[in-house]
Image 1 (cartoon, helix red, strand yellow):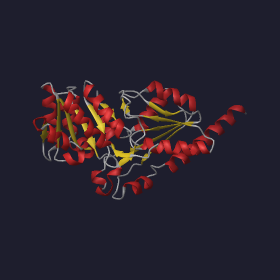
Image 2: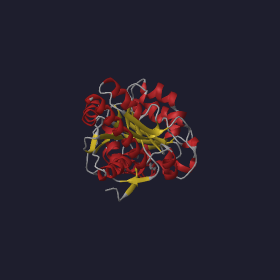
Image 3: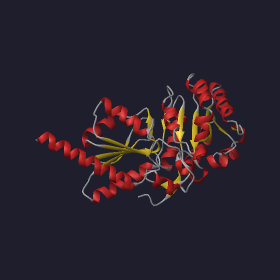
Image 4: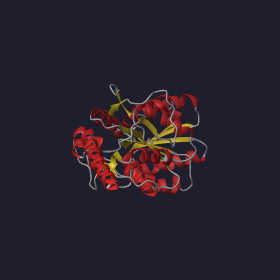
Length: 322
């Protein structure tokens, strides 16, 4: 498992080629980053359906909204930090508010942008997109899932935010498995703790679960590839089953996956929870793995969190039995 690697943005680029072949309403827009976002092949193959807005992200979103209003299915691509921060008002006013069928495919999300540094590291994009009424938020775990998520987004009616990454990550899902928006994928079952992850961190959760199994701890691994709408039923089931939850995300701990999970559990099954993510700070320049290790986004941190939660569970059970 996980021996082959590929970037999620590459899965997106391949899916665009498939959509271009079979769906004439699909058009693609980019903000002068088509090689990086993997839209270049679509631009070469279907030049009459590709639009380069230049370094003008607000205009990119406005163009996409106009095309959607005209009956097309536009995929607007740029780096996540530009798509969500620089064009937020346009997304709010021109896409989310009128509920137009625009797909915002944002690559280079999170701190694994690496050496480009804090100015290019989108660590708040999920929080921003979650807050928009009617916005569907997808965070595929690998390139195979990114491919399937892109196809699903094209069929989904309404605005979609698709979060993609820069580096190659292990392939952990099946290339044939259809993406179902709004469903949690249970990658491993277990009764001691639920590891809830999205995007690049799903692989980290699986790695931690394997190490925990060798220590006699059975961890369930939940792939939250749809952050909004969140599959509350599956999440609550596994939180109840395990009695402890660890969330792992390449995003700020404020407003992203951890916050979404905490919101649900606090209203349903308030079990012990630890959120692993980027603390209330900006990113910095460095090699991707160095940054992940620096912010504790690795299997070792997940294992430490699990050990702490199991101690809390044991202490609570001891009190209940006293």
